[in-house]
Each structure stands twice: as C-alpha cells, then as structure tokens.
Length: 261
Image (tube, rainbow, N blue to C red; front, side, top):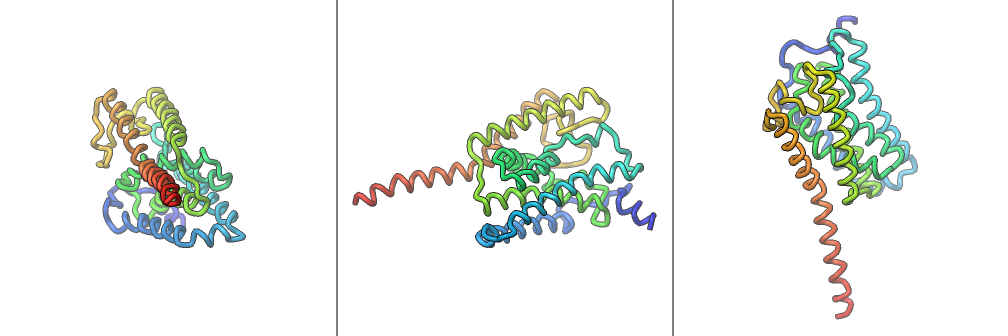
C-alpha cells in the first residue's frame, strides 16, 4: 500500500502524458458536456430548491482541488517542493479561488476576474498542459490538474446560464488591473528568488514545448508582447457580449419604428 501511494502521488522520470491524445481530450470533452447540460437545464437549476447547495458543493470541490496541489507537495518529499516552482503565483490557481467564492457570494468582481483569466490564460493550459508531462492518468496530479483547470469554466458558465451574470466594460478594467498586480508579484518573485523561478512565464520560455513558445526570449520585448496578447485576448473574450449588446440596441431602436407603423 505504501508503494502504491508513493507511486500515485509521485511523478515519473519519463514522459507519461502527451498532448492531443485521448487522455488530453477526454477531460475537456467532459467539461464541455457538463457546460452543455447546465445550459439545457438552466431553468430547472434556477428553480431548484437546493440550488445554493449545488453551488456550495462545487465551490468546496474547487477549493479542495486547489489546496490538494500543495498538500501533495508537502506530503511527498521526493517532489522537491521549492520556492522557485511552487509558490501560489498563478492565474489558474487564483482564478479557481476567486471563482469558488463567486459561487458562494455571487459577487460581480469575483465573476469578472476569473472570466477573463479563463479565456486569456487558463485556456493555454488546456491546449498544452505541459506541467503534467511526467504525471499521466495513473497519477493523482493528472486528476488534480484537470479538475482545477475545468471546474473554473464550469463555475463561470453556471453563473452565466443559471444566474445570468455577464461581464461589462468595467469587468475588463478590473480583470486587467488584477492581471497587472499578478504580473508585478510574479516579476518580484522571479527577481528575488532568481535561479529557475519563472512565475507567469515572464522570465523565459518554458523548458518543454507549449503554445507559449511563440513568446520572444528577450525580456523587455517578451513583457510588451505578453501585454499586447493579453489585451487582444481580453477584447476577444468580451467580443461576444459586445456583439450581443449592439444587436439588442438595434432591435430596441427598430421596435418604436415598427410600433409607429
């Protein structure tokens, strides 16, 4: 039993997870299926007498999933927990925490920040989940990673479909400020720790191949390029709502003319 737990909570020395395989696509497909079900049954969920309990349960799962990442590091010395790699300075991690409290409080700001972080940061982790290269489907980390990175989407879409929450222009500003704060924290940590510290991938490209390989190696150019990409992704994340609002305005403007006729 001891050997089983050492294996399950540990990591391998060789590649166990490969991108664009069944083990990669299955968690994403399950996430999409859950979101579709939430949309289909949104009216019933809204009227369900234990709806709040559902939100609390999902929030609990999200918090436990996030905390279990650090519990595993502390409980398995062979993983080599260190400040260069394992401080809680990630958009994905804090996005999950904010989204879990959003479920509990239905707070608009706690919706805004995860919404933009999911579609501007976490989405890259879904496309190229390089951090689990050495932990495949027979390891705890595989399941912890996918729960952490998919439940945030489920929580945000739940609030959109069931509670009709949505971002606005103020949401963009709040999310951008939050991102800037995280960038300053990451930069400070990278400078103070030195060595291999590379929080938010601001110091250098990743060691393994990922979608972020297009970022320039030069630090100044890299930061400016990241800022430009984030700005573009924020705009694209808000674009569906912008289009929806403009269509609504056109319909509202056309209605008086039809009534007058």
